[in-house]
Length: 212
Image (cartoon, rainbow, N blue to C red; front, side, top):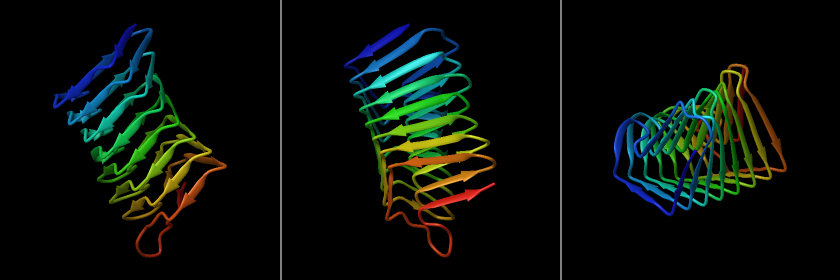
């Protein structure tokens, strides 16, 4: 197990997890009231990368202007299970997919959090999942953007993407799914969620795009 409380991580660089890389560990990693800014990873997880780590709980923390190829702020792979609560993801960037969060397999629960002004080159301006499950509750996804698919949220490879009592507003995609996009057998489930003023140029779907 590991615990990080009231820490500040800035301007760090690595291939995986610019500030922190949790690798093949058992137990719980707890991050409470920490700041991650200007961290960079050449591959995954600009600030934090979870790789085959059992569980993590991230609360009351802020991720700003971090960058990676996948998961500008947070990247996760394999069987990791992550809980995120009362966090802010602001102005993070991915050179491929998942401006704020990128999940490969595993599960991620996000509650009472804000994704704002994040961007990815291709898919998932705020967050995306490939073969994993991404759940959002009472969270706001606003003004995120991509050149490709899913300006706000993106799901591919049989992922499950759920949003409950959320706001998905004013996001932008260059190709399809200004608010959300699901591809390759993925499922989107929305409940009591406002999907408003999202935009895609041309004739593609501004709010929600699905391709099987």
